[in-house]
Image (tube, rainbow, N blue to C red; front, side, top):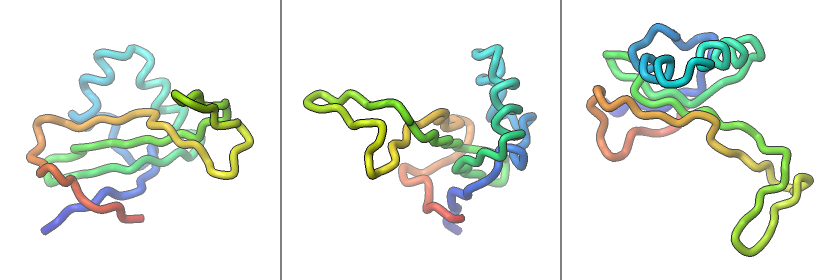
Length: 104
């Protein structure tokens, strides 16, 4: 069965999942950041298997201009500018090269 990324609220993610252990160890402010995102109702794309979370992708909207090699995308651009706020894949999970599809 092919698993899918799901759009899940931070508040519905288990902060005690082993997936987050190294983030909590490497970034002392991670728990406070995660709780802030939970309280503000933020969501992320989450990929799970039977062991727990395998991949986590949080996208944040950029409001500042983005400098490219040959131009600058203005802050009032017609298209929203997204950047990854947190991207991570847990090495302990068995994941094929293609992780899955997006499911809302």
